[in-house]
Length: 439
Ligand code: SF4
Image 1 (spheres, rainbow, N blue to C red):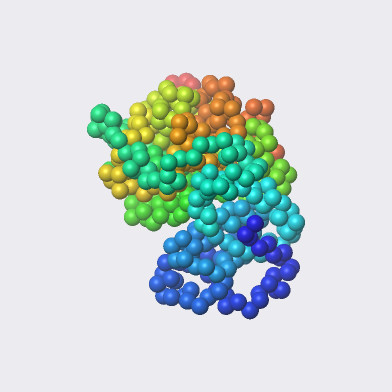
Image 2: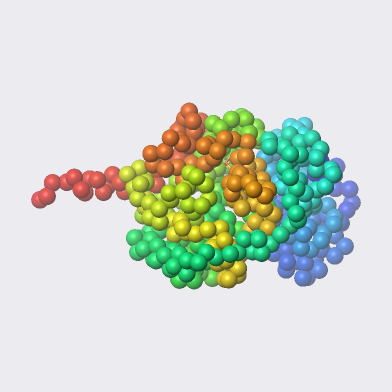
């Protein structure tokens, strides 16, 4: 473990005379570096004002990767056990735990995740590409020893994938027409998961100045690379007032309760617990993001999995349940089409795609794939294929209920959260209007 854990009450004993700079949570690291603010500094303190504010992760990553800071990076503030692995991966080397957090329990977190799969700020190579020492024991489900090595640990996703199909021009026109149809319907949002398809979609919305808002669900468990991309996306969207970006985070208390009761690795123990985690971190904020909307836009493509093989451009099957029309403008695009568009238009994308992560979700639940593996093989890889959805895109009549035993709302309620139906009040109003006798 390369993260020194300091109990809240012991922090005074750990100042050790190093030249220390405390950097504000909203400070611009690049501007500070340009001002030579880090010269001679031996420790930088980065603050987490609250559990759900992840900006210090991006700051640490920038300090390590872009500006080569080699001293101690210390996390302060609301430092909880749930965040520690991510902190170590972002480049933090010490952390002052929040009041009441037991250092022994925090240590156990690292015993569980001693061989983290993905690359990080201190060890950029993913686990499977680290040579001889990568074959050591790991407690990660789907341990890496049996995964064949790839020809190169790093490759440009553009070089690897950008290859349009012959009908690409038609598909592009179809996608733009679908987006225009969505915008014409009324209040409309795009769900941007920060994956390649969604970055393409946001680019199309921007380029055609469509009045479509963007939202991102920051689950509190995203990769540092994804968080860094989110910061870039925020800057990009600031220049596009027609497509404002809103970031939704889970209810902190519910997540804290879930982690305290079930443990940080609960999602590995059963499909029910995994889906409960998805209900709290994704579905509850999704309900808020979709409230008051006429519809939403996703990056679903038919090619992504068997479960998505019949995704339509416009899906009205959810209207009965939640009043929303779902638009999937890239339904017919191939992975090659997506990357062709990215390359041709210089679209921002997640660097994890250069490391064999075609489908990117939360850090504990996503790994790189290897040659011959299915597109979504790196998502919840310890589960059977049929369970692999988080509930965001469950078909209206699907057998794949978001939890096998409980509804997502029952699961969320158990930890103090409530998943709202986006349009329940509008559906009620509409049906009242329809059934009212003519006067
Ligand atoms: S993908 Fe994993 S970490 Fe993210 S919400 Fe679902 S179970 Fe939790």
